[in-house]
Amino acid sequence: ERMRSFAQGRVNGFTGEHGGSQLDGYVFKSKSPSCALTSAPIQGRGGHGPGLFAERFTARWPTVPVVEERGVNRHFVRRLFATFRLRQLFRPLAWTTGDLVAFHTAHKLLLFSCDPGKTRKLGAFVAGSAKLDALRAVGGYSQGFADILAAEPTRGREIDTLQHCVGYFEPGSPERERAAALVQGLIGSSDSVEEARAELAAMIAAVEIDYLQGQHYFVIDDDERAALEVV
Image 1 (cartoon, rainbow, N blue to C red):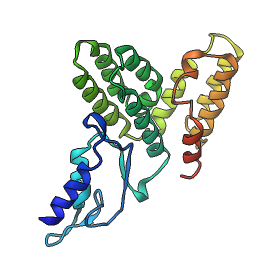
Image 2 (image 1 turned 90 degrees about the vertical axis):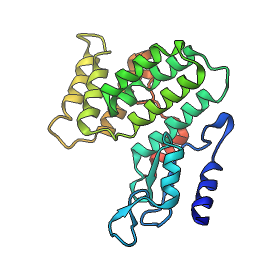
Image 3 (image 1 turned 45 degrees about the vertical axis):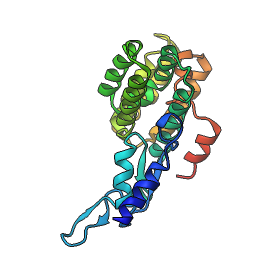
């Protein structure tokens, strides 16, 4: 009982301003009786499950990205930085519906690459968010945002997202033909999606497609780029 009380106190200690979490993500220790997400040995009946602390953490902070240390990868890093940006959006009490619309727009392709259907539903939520009080808007969007990013993009969805981007190039232009050929080359091959995304981003910058240039699917700041380089 003392351990349970300690774990809950520790979890509650992550509460930030306005009652939200002050964390952007949490990496747990695999196979730990207290800190494993799914791999803690269950005494008496065998099998594995969540550790004492991890179970209480995920119940209290369901929108915070979590992973065991063996599962840290590029997508988890992207989730961390996206969660940080969302936390910065909602931190001031003066955020507006327009701010939320702009945030969602800038993250649309990143979300789309994870789950197109849920991204469309979240877009509908944003469209109607002006009718909600601030707490419901924050809670509803935060949960939807976290749910979508929890799904790591498949190669197929990454290719679909890049193909969607090709449609923003001027029809019939040489740039559009090159972009289409680049993405088409990913189908049925083992070519790197990450390298293709970087190459497409350079093409987008060259012809100055404003909407795509503002997408966090392509735009990575220095801190995020540094973190991506070590995973």
